[in-house]
Image (cartoon, rainbow, N blue to C red):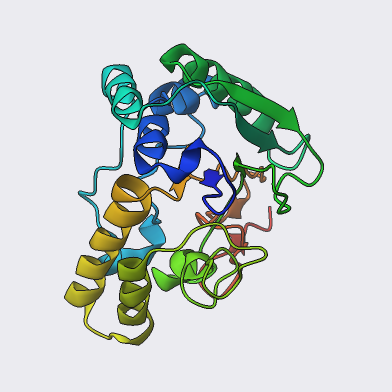
Length: 242
């Protein structure tokens, strides 16, 4: 994903500029061409491992150059440079995706200063947006939202030095995810939180689902999960003796 730093002075402090960026990326081409169909477009900021709490019909922002240009005009964007940092070799395919995203943003009319840095995730006054990843190490929405919630590494209220974004309504809904045991209430909160963090007051652009690729012998009966953990528990793994 691409994460925005709205704490630093830049055009990204204007929500409409961030919304325009969300519509300037061809997510389908990233998945089908740059990843050769080895991953999927994300259904918002969530994972299917959430089970009943996964909001299946959620529609995140889509590639829409016309709308992106309209939003830029509404924002009064004057071509001020936006610094975009990528790691050189942390994520598979990162540079290919980053350079493609750079081109599509430039085609819309953004002036992007694209830099490759070992510490692309580290806070500096010049960082405006950077490549980042997130996952859920257990099957609950709070696992993926926590970094942006109160107490999380990216939340400006509790982490003014390292944080990058904060929204009052989003923070209140974090409390629902943390405390509720009602699946319908959690799904409703999650839907609203995704509308805030991806659409209304964007904090990030989710480029694609994690691409997790394994190789195994045909003698092994095992399916990887959609997160980085490798489940080898009872009933999850078997091997033929022949």
